Image: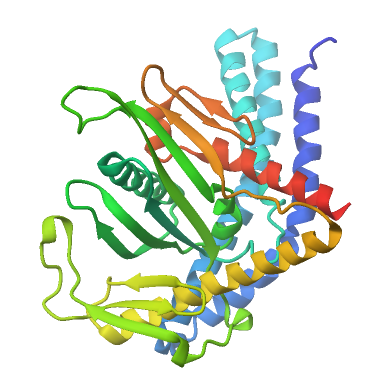
Length: 372
């Protein structure tokens, strides 16, 4: 089949952008932006810091999305002119520049298309990410910390605020566990495919015989619940412990017992928060984390019951989902979607959008199949 000429390629991309724009409903976004701007201009908004930050984050996210879509539209228009200029002047350099811009626009429109798939019941929420070291000893603890950095770098690349609620450091190196929030709209829908077991293969830096080591870490992603998603928690079913926060090597981070650990006795779910100096603030944050985990558990139970009625096996995204191989070759591969790259350094530095986009498409296709 003959390759399409640049004008046809631009036309196809413009049609895709129009479809994406219709699904995103830019007019509704602009209306919401006007409402949020009016709210943010009210001095009384800042009497409630939590609500004020939520309003400004949503406003920033919507403005960014609208600006991006409008900017891509303008660039598509300019690209046609650039190709015409290259043709008129028979300029190879200009044509190469236009080809690069065409490929970049194809990538960006593809990312917008993925964004339209985030239409699950909680996809628009912020994300609470928990990472636990699993099998592999000190290497697993180190691997858990590497994953924490990967996700924080990913959020930083996108300009998403994060807040680390709790980190339990291992004795020799790395971390036993960590919990942090990604405070951006749709971060749960974006990251929920990261839930599962991540496997690392490398030459262990902790083995004096330089042997290859396989280690595992578990990633759990749940939505930060809104008030409308509230789950009643019986205080008598909670065990609340307070303790002194600590950092790597046992270094004191706080001089009072302000860190809070809450155990939900009926389910065994444990959450901790140590990022604030106030015990009350840490308790409030820990209760929010517990709400999120209980909501996620409730959804899983409801889905399992529905699948049982249907006679279906429960879909499990919480098994081994990605392999990171640093030795004897360099590769990162998702075992569900098949997405793969040899640039392991970039992935560990937070460049994981290729994997995330593939996960979203994969999950949506599975969900559509289940709905059918």
